[in-house]
Image (cartoon, rainbow, N blue to C red; front, side, top):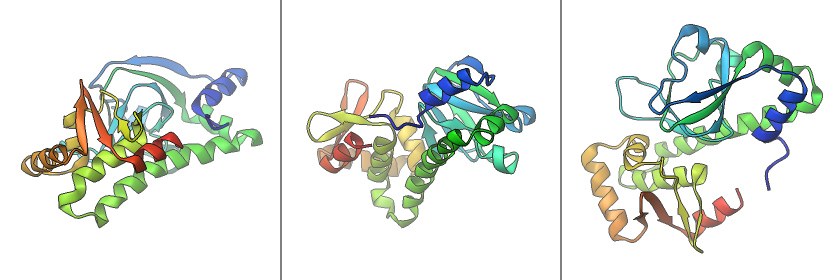
Length: 219
């Protein structure tokens, strides 16, 4: 069951309150916040698709992947431009673009909307928490953690004891999220497959874990 303050309710109340937003169809491999003006004036709600966040345009590593219901560039609403973040679509996306001014009005002027603030921040905090787990994880276990994190964020239950990832979570995306070298990544990938912990169902990765299955079921 969806929580009361979900993105669909957010859009519905935006419409009821005559809060302006622009509906965008964004192709894959598009930098979403690409100018100083957009970075300091707009927040983007993902309605369909996935957007990666990276901190170094010169690196192939990514910080996390945001999906349906997440807000892109939300931190800039509070502390100004977050220049270190690069937001790139990794699939075709449907995006709703809100101005800072309209979003601030919507969230601050109506007490009944305060709950959205909590759920928006909780979503972003989950990404930060999952990424922080890398600091306490040995390098030999980082790929397994990467599969686990992405499954918790974007996976769906599969059979009785597994989780399946969307096809957009390609091998290259998981490698970029893991921050492993190419050789370490493929060594760990082979080991996880040999152990039966992961496999491909057509173009989608499947992770066998009853713990993950139960987590996603109750997410």
